[in-house]
Amino acid sequence: MDELFLVVFGLLMAMVLIWFVLLKAIFIRLERQHPEKYEGMGKPSLFWNNSMKTGYATLKFIGRREHRELNDPGLSKLSDFTLAFFFVYLILFFSLFFGIFGMAGTSNAT
Picture 1 (tube, rainbow, N blue to C red):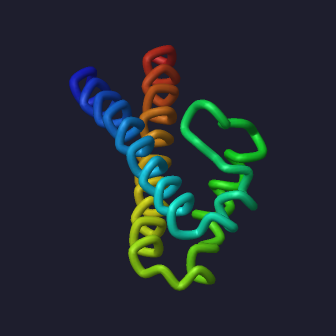
Picture 2 (picture 1 turned 180 degrees about the vertical axis):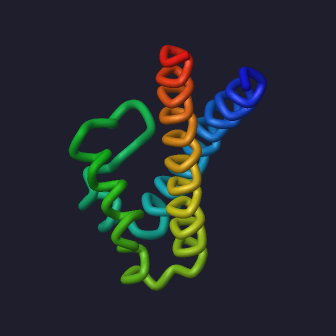
């Protein structure tokens, strides 16, 4: 079971890096091709202008699929993939999280 934990944990760490790449690609596309939307979101970035406000605006943009109103097929594909990627990450994260607590609860009972 420890091996499974390490594999899933390693996968989650790699997924965080991929998440950053996906967000950076979305930010670049927004900044270059949809500057009004980018500015309306507070000019989000990975580190320099990363606040609760811009983070929420980014998640809202991806989650509510606001990219559709921009009529940019490339941005839509990227945003939809990022949303699906986010859900896969959450499923793995919570599986690992509850798996750890599930194992801790059963080992104490024995």
